[in-house]
Image (cartoon, rainbow, N blue to C red):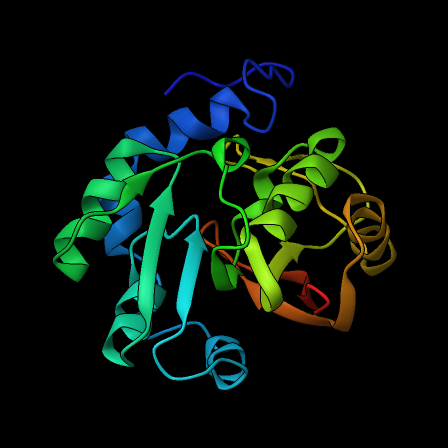
Length: 210
């Protein structure tokens, strides 16, 4: 794949070079990484009633999708890259909806919205708008989790993917700008990504007020 140039946003919440990377690398990407569910998933699911309806934004290879379905939750798994969605379908044995973040048009529909390592690709200027759509999609009292690579300055990794690289304060500010969230927790830790190596991560759990 050719090296990407400066950020080029031909879609409000999407960087084309990042979408192209995942399309080109879908099979390799889906076959790599941990086999089990993401560590924060168990705590997220504990905050939901059995059989609750969950929207997953950016399901990737489908490892968290698989875990949620195994627990009996109603899952709407989505990804913005058709090639990645097809890989996830092969894993979970059911359709995965192709949807970019700013195409979310649901209203008061989901008990939970899970966005592990996905909204970190939304350009900073577009993030509050996307978060407002997530807020709208949740039922009153619904819960949302998202995780972001930290760093404090947006840019690209060594593979050419765009990341918003937010600090904890910047995550909080983006949510405050987007809607009337009840922010339950913001945590920071070291973690790994597809590129390898460790780096800072920021995670947020927030709720739509009743």
